Image 1 (tube, rainbow, N blue to C red):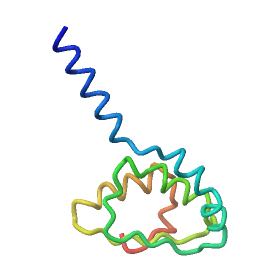
Image 2 (image 1 turned 90 degrees about the vertical axis):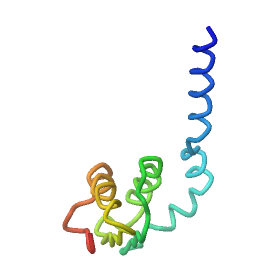
Image 3 (image 1 turned 120 degrees about the vertical axis):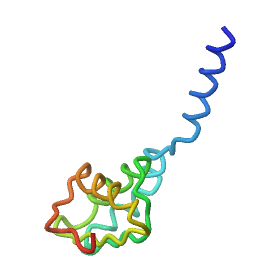
Length: 99
């Protein structure tokens, strides 16, 4: 029983670490709506962690469909995460620079 309670507490603690991305994006809907004419997106030194995918997807869905994405990884370790981000949110590799 004690072990189950400890596991449950760890799950609750992990859930608290998740970003409330839906609420944040909804609250900033005007900002995202105003990105419609953006044609260049620069991602510099970002880890591109999974927790940030919803934000990048929202940006992709908000900018010009022909937008060019410029990636500048902070380290070699960031490259696989950037590649996964590019694939998961559906950025055309023809629109990617500096990766």
